Amino acid sequence: MSMDALLYWVGMAAVAVNALTGVLDSSRKQMDLIGALLVGIATALGGGTIRDLLLDRNVFWVVDQAYLIAAMGTGLITFFIARTFPLPPRLFLIPDAVGLALFTIIGTQISLQWHAPWLVASLMGVITGVVGGVLRDILCNDVPLVFLKGELYATAAWIGAFALIGFQQLGISAVMASWLAMGVVLTLRLLAMRFQITLPAFSQSRSH
Image (cartoon, rainbow, N blue to C red; front, side):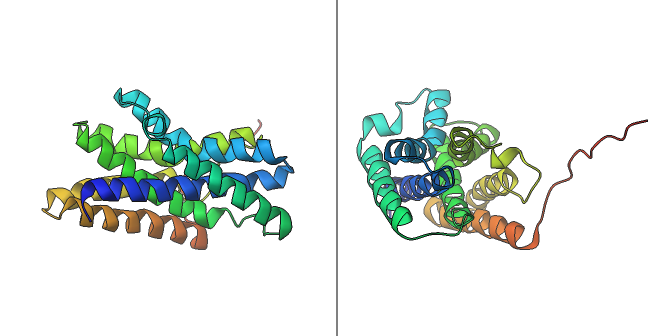
């Protein structure tokens, strides 16, 4: 698989997975079809949109509406399945971890191709991976998952972005480095969820 093919098809998969997570999460709020679709689309396209605007690129789904169609189609299918079959409330966390891995590495690779410095490219990967989830949580009237004291999320994405850059510096092909780095993000996120691995956080201040 060429790098261009990987960016396209993995990007398309990431859009579909994130649309699914957005619609699944919206089901907790008993949204109607339009509300759920808007949440799904924002989740699927939000991170890449911010990345492209920051890099002064043409926004990916405006250039190729197939991404928008994938988000809407996945959202519609997910809505009717979730409406028919009761699903566990936290089910969206697994596809969310997959979407985080896919979008983080796609965002980092696109930024590197756009000749962004390595640190900027890694941050663009994190933005691509997490902003869709932030929009999803805001639209669902929740504190964004990435800002809560909890299992590694943005940290897993940033480590994976650095891993991608490191693999390529070691001479590993861009395509293979991308797959390996996706595995790093997904493994870290799933392990963090399984074993409640967290970062240090501010403790509640005591009154005197």
